[in-house]
Length: 237
Image 1 (tube, rainbow, N blue to C red):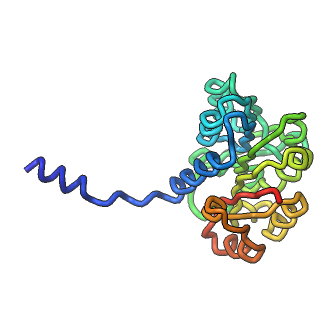
Image 2: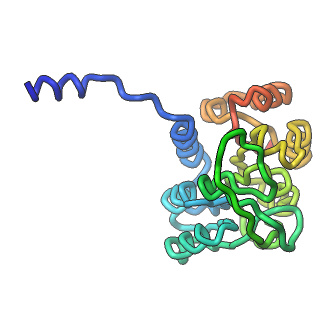
Image 3: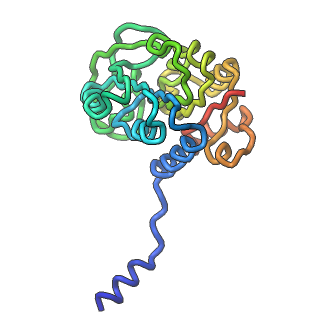
């Protein structure tokens, strides 16, 4: 009886991945596609280090950069990656200084320099953090890929990374969704124009991984409005 039950359970179809799991699987494939063992990577909004772990695993011969303003997460990353990653307790933006930061204690990945209207209950607190530009932390290093997840602060972080982007022309794996970007007053028109000025096109990950052309602006805007995509890759032209 037990053997029969185990056989039935093993034959059941597996549960489909969640959106988070699916995006992680795509991210792994992107890193495999664009990185070598010596690629220098930048993780903006490192959080618990899920993507940073991929960077250090797939690119073990490089020293990487990570930025995480939340103290507890920063110190945890320092303990784990002190030799392989230069970690900074900074919220990247378009200017250096100090700012009030909304820490979503029940979901730290949603923490931001602006308070995001989430539409559901989360616990929050405000803390003071240092801000800075990516250009102020990276020198002549050649960057191969930037992962950017700043809960709406992606546009400002890109403004503060102009020199690094123009020097290295890295692939930029970035989040961009309506609720978070709206808190900063950033539109898809602004994001698309900025990346275009930097010499980039935008694609969704499945198309990029199958070598399909970049999506046009109207498709990017449509995804933004429909909220059916939040993870994109900017590719140097």
